[in-house]
Amino acid sequence: MIERTKIQTIYQGGVPAFVVIPFQDFAREHPIEAEQIKPLSPRIPEGDYIPHEVVELLVEQNMSIVRAWREYLGLTQAEVAEKAGITQAALSQMEAGGKRLRKVTREKLATAMGLSPGQLDV
Image 1 (cartoon, rainbow, N blue to C red):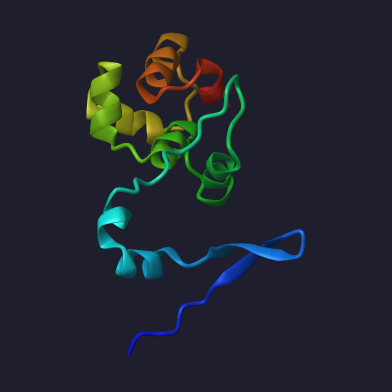
Image 2: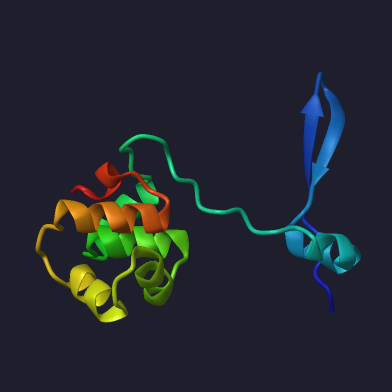
């Protein structure tokens, strides 16, 4: 049995203007349109700012900054290593070790992930 859809009505000037429904209900009624909706890419702030989600991975999961960014961005070690021109084994060691990255390495990794070098400088 299908559960009843929970809707939210949004009012403007005291008059109903929009109705919000759960995506799974929309997808059930409009499968073709739902297929065309792509997930949002993670947001990379400009400058040296680091999103809360990355900081959360650093603190709560005790991850290195490189691994936290990689996971936040949904990238594999193989993808980042290839784009940075290093081996996956080298990247794995960088993610696991508590050593500070060399400037050249930090710049390669930042470029590979679409970040500024300062975003890897923690």
